[in-house]
Amino acid sequence: MINEDISNLSPEQFEDITGIRKGTLEVIIGSPPCQTFSTIGVPKIKSLKNGDIETDPRNYLFNYFFNYISYYRPEIFLMENVPGMKTKYKGKLFDRLIDLVLGLGYEPHIQIINSVEFGVPQVRKRLILVGTKKGIKFKFHAPTHYCCEEKQVNIFTLDESKLQKATTVYDAISDLPKIYDGCREDELPYSKDTNLTNYQIMIRNKNSTVRNNICRMSNDRAKKVFSYMSQGSKYMDLPKNVRQILPFREDIFPDA
Image (tube, rainbow, N blue to C red):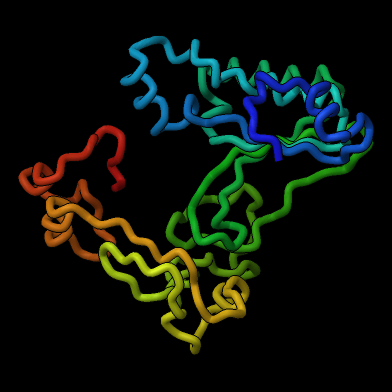
């Protein structure tokens, strides 16, 4: 592992350090920073920089990623980012990116994938770009799970009866140790060993204990706000006078 700013480390320098030579890599995977494309990151950057976000250098770090693609010429490369990257700046930045891909002789495959549709206990959409050399057959894997909460039309138009039901957070973590506000215990036993979900059976270790049970201490104002909330409710569901007990930036975190 090399901990370095990619803009300071050329592919040639990387090769000298690692001994990884041209023509020896089949796959390169990269994930440029997403702050300038995300719904949360943009307002934060604007409030800190007070400038034109289009000049933020993180918009263009993917160029350094493609320097490595150009140098090593892998059979396949994969790049991941937030869906907003595709439409930001009226799509001009993404069009430039695709021109880079085509100019390097790769065929682009683009898909927005939701992790919940593949058994992950989280609704999380990501833009996936896969580039393949000519002659390599590629297609995105069809979803294995369906999310009954979103009621969204799946682009694969699959019959939900043939898919597994989405893995919920409860399915994933309901066997974890029972912790408390401010818990500082490192290693604790699982809270149950029977009636486990398939996900829990797959993911748990053989030690029957879980490490790192370090819980942050909620401040008194937060605890007061919690007392007004029911399970599953959101901060913005509360009356304004209650929200003022512990005010958040309501324009950024409406789903808190």
